[in-house]
Amino acid sequence: MLSPDVISKIIMFAVLIPAIVFHEVAHGYVAYLLGDPTAKSRGRLSLNPLKHIDPFGTIILPLLMVALLGFGFGYAKPVPINTAYFKDRRKGMFYTGIAGPSVNLVMAILGGIGVRLLNVLPDQLFSGWLFYVYLAFYLFALMNLVLMFFNLIPLPPLDGSRVLPLFLSDNAMRTYAKVEQYGFVILIAFVYIAPRFLGFDPIDAYFNATVVPIMQLLSGVS
Image 1 (cartoon, rainbow, N blue to C red):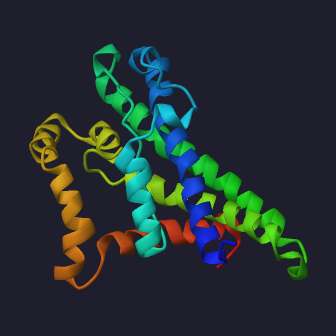
Image 2: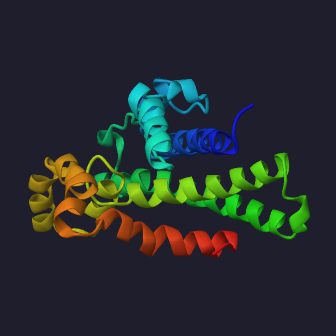
């Protein structure tokens, strides 16, 4: 029989899959509404997880993080978008970029509602399968918030890099374009290198300032 810890990690991985899939489909669907048929023509508007799985980002990375760190996040194969179809490239990038995090916020709200509904039940009922249903709602809300805020970091390949250009002048955009090619390196530095040299974890601080208070607001759990 599986231990409670193993079951909890399985639930965490299971709720992460729909969070990632809906995130990517949202990008493609908004692009389609804006005139870009690329994602639709390649079958990427499907909710079938198999259409979006990246072997490393969707399976291996989340499993390793959950097993080693107790939490995890991942990514799917990026939905193909051709900005040449957009009438206004900057606005098109903004709308497609913000679509994924927006869907994650909606799903986090739904998860939080599930937690609040179950919180009204007597404590003695929280045993067995009902506890794991409660945990699934809680982790579903949490994973969606983590995915949302992580993707809003304005560094490529994250969605924030699509949102930021709408607010930049042409000169600032040219400067940003020069930095953009180093986005992944900067991101890795923040995630893995900065904590060892700065004495604090900037990503952890960022999540504490964003994910934690909003999670408390949505779930009512402090």
